[in-house]
Length: 294
Image (cartoon, rainbow, N blue to C red):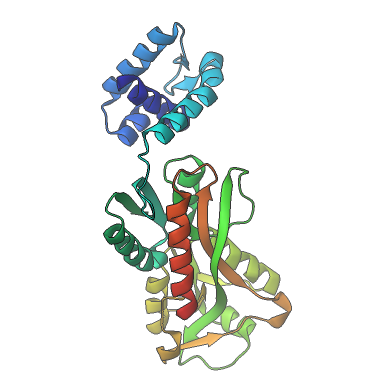
């Protein structure tokens, strides 16, 4: 149905703010997107965009139509979803996960798809902030991400597990005072554009430590590798997928008690209006069970 496709393109343009970005998102050329939007304007009998600049921004008429178009698309998707046989999941959904959670999620999804032949699940990986944005804007159905506090009213969060933050140093480092170790060695930072990196930065501020920053990465295992090579020290969450007891070339030191319990929270983020909450609940329960055993 061409009109439905045009309406989906319209919501992509509204969200992304340009025909070129929307074209990349929906897999069309910019010219095709422009033609679709002109066709919609002819059908509705009014202009929907302010085309005075390089961006394609909704004008008042477009802004008025946007929530109604979203409702129409949601209704269409509900009607289109086939009724599942008893005890079976059917339909399509997309689930994201941060890198450290993807292997377990992939195993769970593979098992689900083998048990439910009418179910199609696409997995995407990314940074926590990127995946959260995609859930909030309806680009994906759910994601396993780092908890970041305040969430939109239409979003549901369910905790899976917590990863404690620790000071991680080479085995050759002597002493037990975390402030002295941090002040006396190059510091390897986790990416401060992400919630985990900002959380670590707040910890350092509370400790009153000024670090000698050597580099900043969004890759926990790469940071651990650099610590092993005695490049510096770091503060990281203890990934539940790693065997920390077997890492004899690293020292894991607790942070000062006065800071209280410091953890990175991992959970499932999902839109409350998701049509596939039965599937995401099954994934959540399976993942929580696996996490409890590791």
